[in-house]
Length: 197
Image (tube, rainbow, N blue to C red; front, side, top):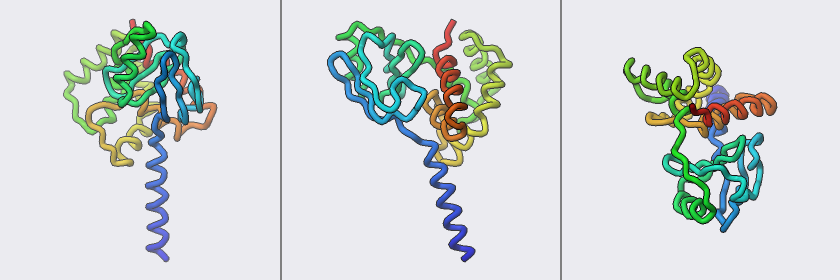
């Protein structure tokens, strides 16, 4: 009986770990629209399904990781496999391509499976400050997401060592917060990602 309880407990922990990974749904790139389906982040304009017109899109970022469609007050993720299609879509619809914004990647550096030198940590802080953050705000954000990001990266055995991003923090925090709390976090997370001076 003790062994059975241990197996059930381990299975429950594994299931909770996999709940942290939610994917980004499916997307189809058409001539002047992008169809998003099964999108996991409820506060998003794309949840659970949306046909995004090219005229709604401010910029598209395809240069690192999953692609991002930047809409007025939102960011919608599209699989990295669609980069070439998105590049053509952007060109045909006169949508500017924007570089990857590293704000969340930099904020989440302490939760990587990597050791950083003091010089590297200082450089990251300087980059964030150049984008309009201050040290107090950075520490407050890190305190809010820290425990959950450790769970996301280490309890799941992901052990990401290079970069955690907006997608990662949204995936992790949607499990921690209730619907209203996540709605508020989502709004702040998007603002943090888009912030630039």
